[in-house]
Image 1: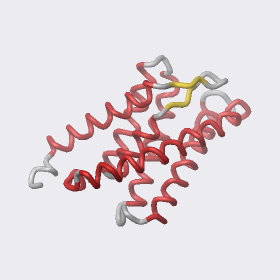
Image 2: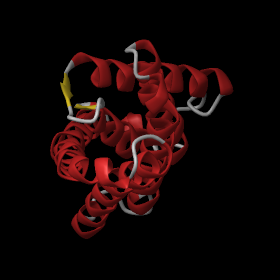
Image 3: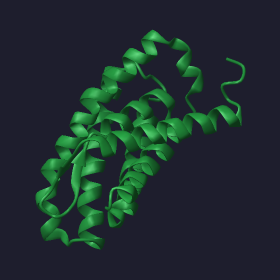
Image 4: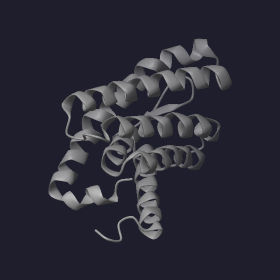
Length: 172
């Protein structure tokens, strides 16, 4: 598609995908013992990253989760969510970028997503928000959250890409 790389199209895609991530983050929240929550954000982050590429994933994943934290009364978590989910989106999209149909690259990107989310939240919340002792019990919930994200976000992306092949023109 000739106009798929125009700045207006790119900004529109980023705006819509950021909103999708925010809605998935806000829609279902399961509270955790330290005052945070787990959500379906990683379903949207994974879908956006696999479908629209690393730059859209980075911006939409980071900004969408941070906005939902700010809107939902979890403002102290917003910088952590922005950093962790932005990095998660960037890395998983970069891994599958050359060959999005490669099963081994999909598995690698899933493992990276789990490590980045669980490890990122542990390190950043431990260092800046709640201490490492309090952050440690959150690790299993973050592993589940990111694994669920990959288990649902990847097949959703594959289905959309199969149904609408021209969507690949919008990845960057």
